[in-house]
Figure 1 (cartoon, rainbow, N blue to C red):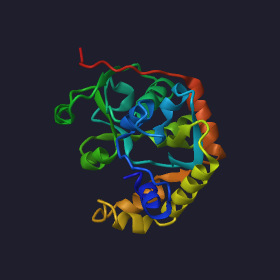
Figure 2: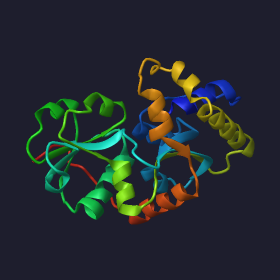
Figure 3: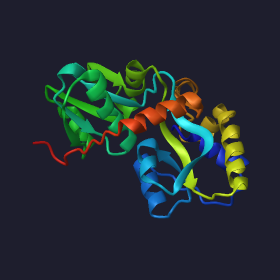
Length: 243
């Protein structure tokens, strides 16, 4: 749902003549690396590993307050959590969770890849679950504690957070950059119309979420916050199975 304005702008205000390939964040990275995509909305945790890529627009998926769709849920207070199951669809959210565990929550949990979401119905004491995207809406209210990772980052750093930025390989023509910038501006200025054209037209929360929780402008504050995130350099490698 985060990308609805971008998709709308690309479909209605861009003359790129390009195929639009939709995928979860982690797959966007893979598509770019494998050459299936020339331009990608890239999870920020992966950008430093791409020496031939550069950020090309003033738009992003960011938050200056609660983001709502990147959370840790648990029936155990976070300072007592012993194991965190990680949603595999966002590498950025995984690394952000690791930063917060170290710098804010002061815990050293076991990190486990969430292979199936049915485990949410069988939480044990000390378990927590990192969820992103639409799955968060499906599980709101099911757990005693919910920690919004954008808000937690802001508690730790006093800065906004950026989850994804637009990248292309170095040397992308300026005409393409300008076309993308114009398309994204058009989409962000027509969020209501974009929702009506999307699969989320019947979701009452969609407009509020895209205008209050998501901040699309990649400004200097987000640039600086992103550099801090990159400089920390933490790498979380989850186990495939608990034990």
